Image 1 (tube, protein in one colour):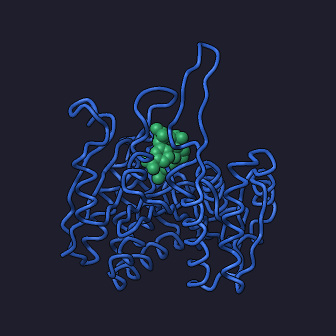
Image 2 (cartoon, protein in one colour):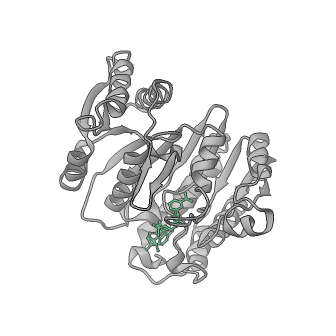
Image 3 (tube, rainbow, N blue to C red):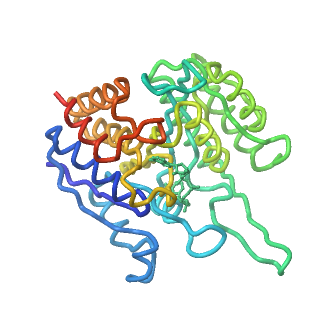
Length: 332
Ligand code: NAI
């Protein structure tokens, strides 16, 4: 029996979380889900959107599966996602981006893994209104955080036989902050002579990803560029409905999709649970449930390849629950 924290989130979160929990249960994995709500509704009842009980639960269980949580735009509380990553020091945001058979996109043979630094940069939340017409935000880049995300990316490349790691910055403009990130990347790269090291500016990367994504392998990026470029990566492989992610720290991990709470399709049984399911499959591997992980992965890929029960974001008509039931039917 595994004890795992489940954050059902809001928007489409509870719908996709329900589908994923049912699929995992049908695959025979015994999990005691410690359900911890967070977000706007919680802020109404408990005064804060991310109560300490959520942090304590993840610290105790060491692993969490998290569906998206809405952040008010341009006002309101600080993002629960950003706070959670910071509080638990989940420094590595791992976002694989690989074509899935059956999902048609204009791009083939995409196989990129993005490593986004998760704890600092403009996401440090140090913002200030100077007067009615001026506001400022401070971009923090430290050697410690830059070195460890680069080490994580190079270690991954070594472990999984990847050939190149590319550091992504805007160091021509942000000379001190991104310049520091780049110096750290170079310093780490020197310790991995077997892996080719490249550098690219983020604007050029975006253009090249759209023209020739096949040429990229492992990317390592500061927080803001990582956030934006990983959505671009999701677009290359079929959209946010299929883009998985994980936030890894020392001895603690939170698995969550790249996408947000999709308020435009909330409560309509239309959301694609694939991204959360792929994140959960990685979570099962992380806790050593490799057989169940492989079984669910095969059932999911069969469902997507056959294409009879695709959700609307993938051009089909299936509901979230129909898709879920087809994955369950495909489980061996
Ligand atoms: P979003 O990712 O929620 O939605 C963008 C578009 O993709 C929408 O058209 C949506 O319907 C579609 N989409 C996303 N996931 C889908 C899925 N599983 N199946 C089918 N279609 C899907 O991004 P948006 O609208 O910018 O953000 C909405 C809220 O989510 C915001 O409050 C934002 O802060 C929050 N957010 C939360 C994240 C998290 O909890 N980790 C990550 C990103 C955004």
